[in-house]
Length: 261
Image (spheres, rainbow, N blue to C red):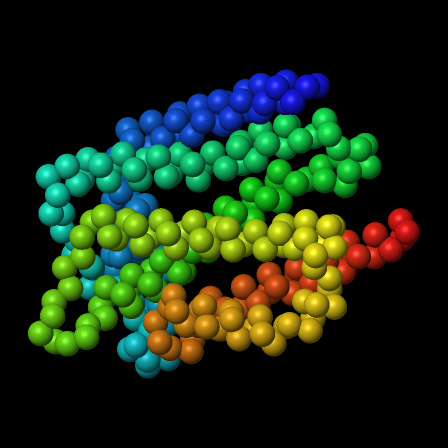
């Protein structure tokens, strides 16, 4: 296939991916009440499962600081078209997130003809793994990081003279940014796999920098959670586990490359 033929083929995959995003975005737009009341805005409410779990745990441990979002965060809208534009943007974001498995599948179909039979066999589950890691990161963020961040940022005050009045757009921006960033962060094993394949990353390097990675993970956990050790551990442990899994992946890749040589 010529260069222009490849571009034409890629265009077809991009169009199908875009159509999937639009289709799911339309469904999300129609389901406005469920999308906002039960999904997007739920982490700030006391009835949200994570908030109830933390408040129950705070009672068991006699640690009131663990109870999060006991009072719902009040949101305001100061833009005439703010609620409508937020509705459209959130629907599009939801369409992208839900379409991720199909988008990954379309790109896999595009690159598959260029792979050798052995590469196709070894990467047969790539679509499931990439999509699964991203969606796992999204759910991890939604059920843990987002409620903790909303509780901390929404209640933080530099002075009692300053009252927090959070704009709807600011809340949505924070939630979507944290969610997407965590979803991408959970793709660490995939990035490590490809970097190890091209020789940029080695298991020895990752082991050598384990302590540095641990410090960075703790710093990241401290940045996106309330200032208590328990919350930081809850967020930091899965991230450190991903790093350890990535070391094993890099080790397996190095072993395969050595066997081929």
